Image (cartoon, rainbow, N blue to C red; front, side, top):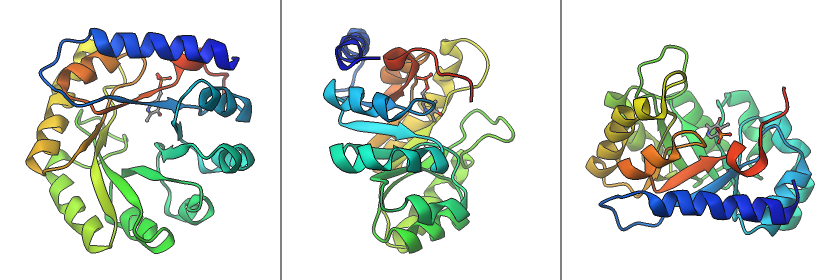
Length: 218
Ligand SMILES: *Cc1c(COP(=O)(O)O)cnc(C)c1O
């Protein structure tokens, strides 16, 4: 995908966001999710005007080290975080979005002191999915702060199955938690359900397919 193509698709994503009726006045940031694509996609995204990219896998992120160092987008880590991978990517990550348990909070605090982070919440109750129970989010925010991290907000992923509308209840739970905890960032919504997320109060959507097309099989 060339930079002009990505720019056109990014404009379409911004138009989708602008079309959502919402009672909020905050801006909605778009994170370009480049997982599954090469460094060329990162380059196109940055040239198209994306200032933040999202990556899910430590190993893959490291293959894009050169382009990330050269173009300096904000790099959001949005995948399942394994403690033993934190160290290798710490220098490249600008925002850790998926802290969901004490062990990874402590590891990020150790390898990336003072880093900006989000706590990931599993608001769908699906087993085996990343994210803490909504009832634990406050405690994890407190722990992360005690460890010296800068907690900017919460992140969540909609249900794996179902229609985009099925994501709404979980998104509302997470938005309410963001408000209750006095946080700023509410990262939720992907290509399929970003409209629902923005209506529910997302301040950040993470978009891959709508910008780059379907991902090649891993
Ligand atoms: C892959 C992924 C996205 C982007 O998904 P699309 O449907 O391609 O927009 C967003 N967030 C997370 C956590 C992801 O894993």
